Image 1 (cartoon, one colour):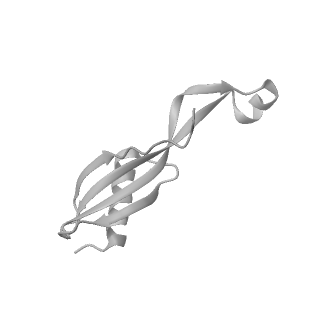
Image 2 (cartoon, rainbow, N blue to C red):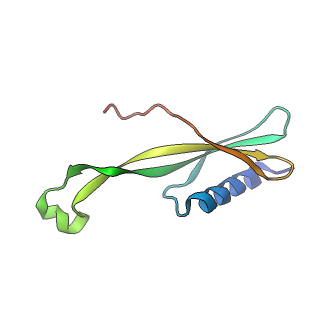
Length: 101
């Protein structure tokens, strides 16, 4: 049977294989099902929103670039077989935003 550490390593490897380079990829939660057959591993990462949110004043444009892009923390829950180590599913986990806007 896979250990929690093994399940996290498999989840991380799977995410990188699917998405490529991921900023701020971290394990957020891990849980073994009561029947000890499935690990649920929640991974969090920074997702960049493609549209510009505001313009930077001209003095800073040469340093920071012409626009600032908003980022948000995104979470995926991966279900991993505790016996085989196969990733069975990957789903979006919705978390209420702390941002009041």
